[in-house]
Length: 422
Ligand SMILES: Cc1cc2nc3c(=O)[nH]c(=O)nc-3n(C[C@H](O)[C@H](O)[C@H](O)COP(=O)(O)OP(=O)(O)OC[C@H]3O[C@@H](n4cnc5c(N)ncnc54)[C@H](O)[C@@H]3O)c2cc1C
Image 1 (cartoon, rainbow, N blue to C red):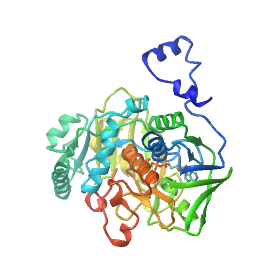
Image 2: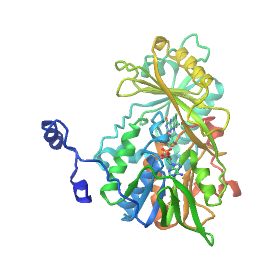
Image 3: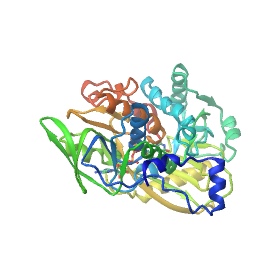
Image 4: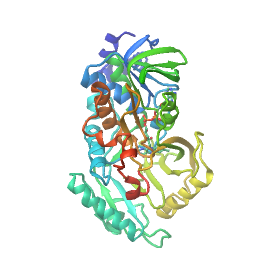
């Protein structure tokens, strides 16, 4: 299919009705599968949500369309398609609030922007507090959020139960002492985010190349000049590495050692049931979080394994512990059957904040370290990283998230604030 055909594919009530009449057999493909060209202005390594969003904004905002996204598997097959889709922006520090709220603002218009339904649902994210320390952290975060114009409010246990009726607030091993609620928070459909950005980027001329692994970064006199791939060498003006759990592997190809540890992080879903769970509930103390997908499955997230690994399977004891906690908080789910579980490889920095910007190798840029909580940032991350790749300099929002903060000590320590950050 050529580019012209792609740009003709707009979803509307009329195109839906027209295609319904022909049994939905004539929808065109969402994106082309081109052969890689010998050279691009920008090569993006990693076809997850962040890489695809970066390509989209490079083309849309900066009019740079001679761009390739190189993905070793299939689009969204990494953490993008494996996460529990929680979106919120109530982070503690000013830098984080700016970044995640930038994403939240983009989420709110994303389906219209992409002409593709990413099923963004602002059903509210409730973060439970189980002890005095949790309550103090919740209050501190809420006050900081308000100074940054980020909505967040404290609820009593009774108000939390009113907002989420399945929540048990009595006779608990993990007592619910209160909760923080971000009403603007919620969920989005993860695959749709990858597909929507891919479709939009492809329409503007970006080449999306799947089943193509980057195996080396060619560096000449301190400057990256291209990528070695399983389909040959591709010259690049600039390279953006957005490889999540494998970022340190790719960066090492350019001789860069990143301050990252990669861990398996698991999630699981139940059999589908009728709508029973109205919001998202998280407990950082127990390390469990839950929502219900539009298909009806309970989507449950666990903690990371305690050891580093690139295996996309986690330890059984981790999800057992999570389910014990979920059942105490929501006893009505005690007879639900679990359908499947899986893991993704998350790239964790020492301060639990991402790294977005330059590296010591000229023309080689990184966007990584999102750890357990980068899905929510996808639109904002892509937007600011596109700016960084287009101009060679960070956007003001991602400037604090530089690699050299681990040398100069200007850390953005969301770990100490939250213990975990989803
Ligand atoms: C179980 C789980 C639950 C989570 N829950 C949440 C949540 O509720 N909310 C939230 O905000 N975040 C959550 N996250 C984190 C979130 O999923 C990630 O931070 C985010 O999706 C990262 O997106 P990405 O595009 O950077 O990475 P990915 O989607 O992983 O994309 C990176 C891509 O790079 C490709 N790649 C790697 N190496 C190479 C190579 N050499 N050559 C070519 N391609 C390569 C990979 O195949 C992959 O597709 C969760 C993660 C997991 C695993």
